[in-house]
Amino acid sequence: MSTIDPATAEWLGKLGFKVSNDAPWVEALTHGSFHHGANGTGGSDYQRLEFLGDRVLGLSVASWLYKAGNSPEGKLSQRLNALVSGATCAEIAREIGLQDHIRLGKQAREDGGANSDNILGDVMEALIGASFVEHGYEATRDVVYRLWATELSGDVGKAKHPKSALQEWCAGNRRAMPVYEVVDRSGPDHDTRFKVRVSIHNVGAAEAIANSKGAAERLAAETFLEHFG
Image (cartoon, rainbow, N blue to C red; front, side, top):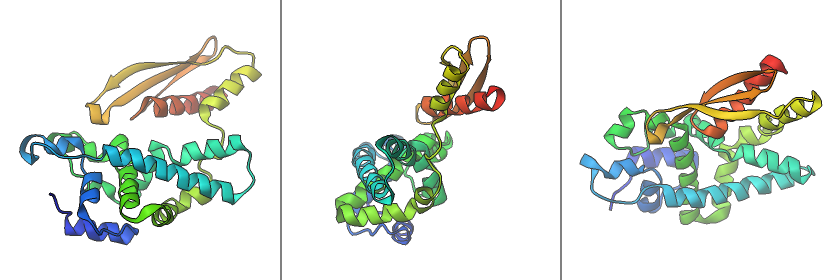
């Protein structure tokens, strides 16, 4: 059984993640590529803990939003989706230096896996899952609130989603609805880059690139509104 690196255990402790049993934390920080080639021949990766952590994060944030005011369900859902999104998880992961502690295979690391939004977001959720396994919901919720403090108290998710805003712009200006298409896809599976174009008939088009199709569509809609809105 793998043991956690002392420097990583210290880093987790400073964040509020107390390590009692190494196993879930090692698993949470391990990408599937780590168990191939020179690193080993088999073992667990973060996917199961990511699944669990995603639900714990969602419940924690939903509870905070419910208690924070009397916003209607639609507004609550809008903020929740933004606060627990892969992009937000990846942003927080970078802020705490998570990329320095992920266990990646040699090729995945050389391909930039440690800086992939997808991997960073997934491992962030897996750490939340590991905390839940070790210490339960309340202790994990409190760590989430500390790590997400700026986002919870800020404007993340308060503005209308760019794709919804663009649809409303089209309706208000009697234009055809926007059409999104992936015009290019590049990079390895763990760090895929999507180039998306959004176009509106007789108005114009805009393009954007991101680590996921959804994020690229959002950025393309933002760019379109900046140019034509």
